[in-house]
Length: 450
Image: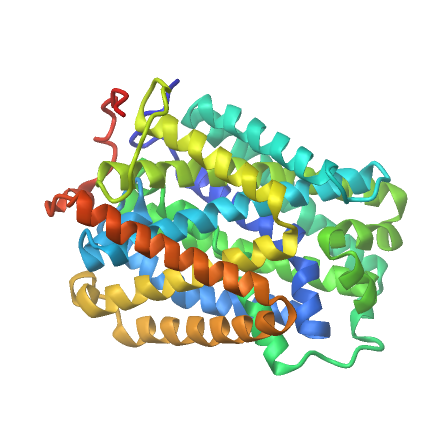
């Protein structure tokens, strides 16, 4: 399999397509209904608030990627900030797990829309079975190499950004630019709105996919940052269009009732049966491309962490490179999550992992690297503060409604850092700064070792 790192294999357009592919797949299709459930009639504004928080967060990643573009960008940022320590390794693993969680979230969303399009109830064993099938398909596409991912991402990005934006405009037009979701609603409490922002942030976190493919982007010192900014801007416009379109077509209670397939539910009253089927088709394209792009990035991040000796590796008898193996690991973990967790819990777990990792990145960069990369300290501290407020509100709300997922998240994060502490104590990593320039030179093949 052609799994080597390929310098200059992803153009600016390819990179933006990958970023929007992950974001739009998860953000609109998997999370709109869940955000509406928490935020009430203010749910379109939750996307705006999520974009603001993401904008402050993205500043750190852009500054770091401009300085040191890397094929495993998050791992590079953390090791630059903390060295090869438990904090760096644990936070990087949290990021990788949050990306894998995103794959299972979007895979289950694909299944719910497909079943809804077939006039079947999106429940029972068919949902995880179809989701796992999509993940396996995404593995096969990734196994074909970077060019396949780039071409498919381009095609699907054009289809879905254009199509979903068209859906938003058409539904708003058909709904007479009214906001049906506000009628009869009491309005979301402040705590509920803040908690909804945690999920809205997940709708934008796909920009980290770009960071994790930095060394493979053409002119990475400029284009990684550009791609992040362009992707976030595109998604803000699309998210607002669709949020207002859904709100114009359905009252809030119906949006919440159909939270796993809100766009399809909103399409029929606004656009008729043909519009319903077109929306389902768009959802399938968006979610499929989201899984493909996410697997592409997380497997590379895991490969880099393995090369840096920050996580263990075993080939389990498989031939090929470390990248081949991490691709398989990613698919297996995502499939397990798809089988055992529903959409709401998957999204919650992803939010907890991502926000904790994000706070650690900003703190590490503020503490040790802000002067070296020319970053403004107040921006980094603002990013930390915003993340902390949103995380606290989300945890408090989930503790009231679903305490088990809070316990699972805390236990999972504790296990990750404890595991890394033991692993690094038994296998001290090199302190050489190879990770700072860790990019396309990683093309050597790694022979299987136990």
